[in-house]
Image (cartoon, one colour):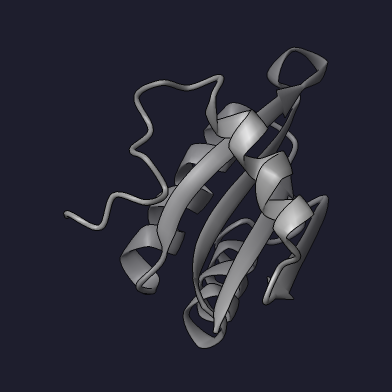
Length: 103
């Protein structure tokens, strides 16, 4: 079952460190990020199976102790949720297509 994980952090540096830990810890794919308040609030979004996404989110929270603003894992996201993520991904043309299965 597919899941998405979101981790919100107070700045880009913390977000990049957390993303690195998430990708190294579990078999997840980086989907996109959202930057608000001039980069002072950054939300990372990853996907994978529920166990992998949960492991990745927990690893990010452990790495950024006290700095995670919010986090969640959503199992089997609704198609409208995927549409919202795709809108975010379109801002970053360097991110590979969600339907591209090549690695």
